[in-house]
Picture: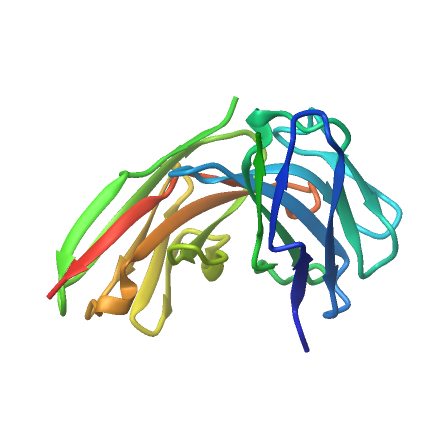
Length: 113
Length: 111
């Protein structure tokens, strides 16, 4: 049971480049989330998916798109990276109703120059 | 709007008790969670309060007062390994379990 996995662990992009951050969970969870964390700050929700086939915006969705490919996978895409998107990105998942815990992946450290 | 406030830093000594407070302003409040994050690591779940009162899990307890929009995390018998950042997070009502996080409290435990 790997839990929540994220790839890549580290990435450096130039301004204007695009990339997709991958997230997968093997816990059969319905809900999945993408957060960003800037230095010394809390986590801010970018997008979430309450169940397979649905996605919704969080607090800071601008500049990002998501795809809930299937129940296991939830990807985050930066179409045209900007230095303001330099951050650590965490993916999380949550079991069906009744479980309040979100399980986080190890994070992707992204630098945009 | 919505906001959560918690102290930015707390320092305590090994073996002591420390309380980290969290006040929130939000619509559609469902419950309050606490997460721990060690430097460079992923957040890990500590506790959840959906109802008023105290929840105890080992050395950690969490309290919620919905009428005061206030909660706290209590850490007892502090150990060096408890040095980490602690985040309170509001769970919103009927919104896919999404969380709004506070900015975190950095706890330093000294010998």
